[in-house]
Image (cartoon, rainbow, N blue to C red; front, side, top):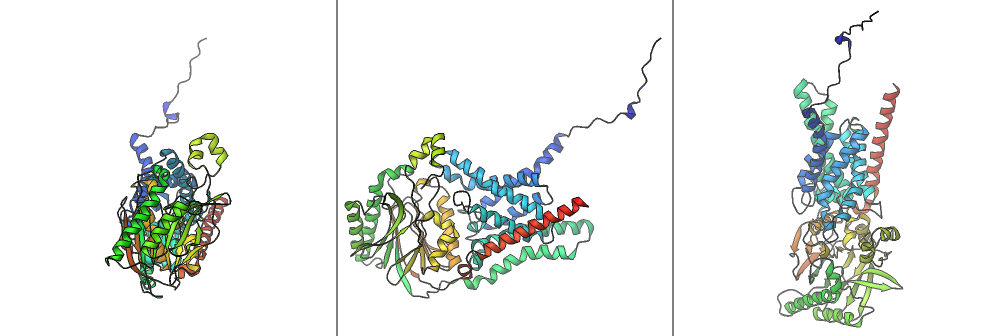
Length: 532
């Protein structure tokens, strides 16, 4: 008997799943590309460019790609935004040591931005979401400024706003409030466009949503304009004539460390050249002189010849000098500022408190040494941390000290002012970073600090750019890079405290709590929705 197979009606078979077209695949890449490119746009808003306003469309696009996303997508998009921003911003970290440390640093720092992306996506469906989302960004900055290895706050949004309309807000609540305003305005820009498109499509829009979008965009600008009276160059405690010395270095790069005596001689020579101009009546005699970090890597307490060089320069100029030295004491190494009086010699010292990981000390030394002994040979001995704020007494002027890397940390600058500083100096050594953007990024930080605390800020740098910054954040004088030069100017001394100085960490704590409240609310709403 023959068995005939049953006929099959092809219409009853499930249709084969069509593979996505190339167009559909490319479309899926659009959010990823937008996230990365908006990060690049944020980088372009930073110095040495003066395109501060590009931060607003950068955050507008960031808000667009994150709104309504699940946590996995938000994590990836946030990481891409972080890479787009931080890879070009921090490229200077690999100038002398190769791409490895640069890429490792960016890979770690971008994780914080990725987590911020998750938080922004979570709060993006809440009422007044731009407020919650901007607070989440500041919470991410607060975390980056503290961990790992005591934090790395480079790339705070506030540091890209030295030329911007929002700068006066630094005097209200420091870098957290300034950064919050910029991010809020950027998210508000996206929300205004989103609401506008919704109205155009449906001719209907919820009034509360429209009002919140407009306020998110407009209020930061209004607040910045209202804060302008806090910015003043008035000399409350008289004036001081200050000299900033840039001696230059023999060669670029890390090799200059092997030429320590030459660097000291260069700064002494430039000071003596300035002394000759003073004697000739070409420039006024300074009340005090500021040398940069590492201007005497030869310990003047242990080497009589180095002490003699500094002493000769101080006597020539007839004024005390703040010298940046490397000092060994009780078997410990310190990055130290030394107040050198022409008659009494060394009278005061300040030891740098926020030392730089992988530059001035090596975290996880044994582990890193086992993997690669290059780092251990470069940082053969760790610098120890100071414990007291640095405020030098130059007679009628009290000068606060924040050495180089410390300028990026809110607390390290603020406590010099709360301990009586009438002006601030940021002695730095950027010679190891060649002609990279690092110098200009750091200079912008000092401009923000000037407004934040309403103080004159001087920036003496071994190889440039050295500068004198007025309390309103404007640069009154600056040098070129890798030239020997000096700046002399009469600057205002001030003792009043801005709200930012008085409030200290409180605005940042408040914004972190707002971020936590928004994320908690979003999680609770999501949990209720899943139960329903």
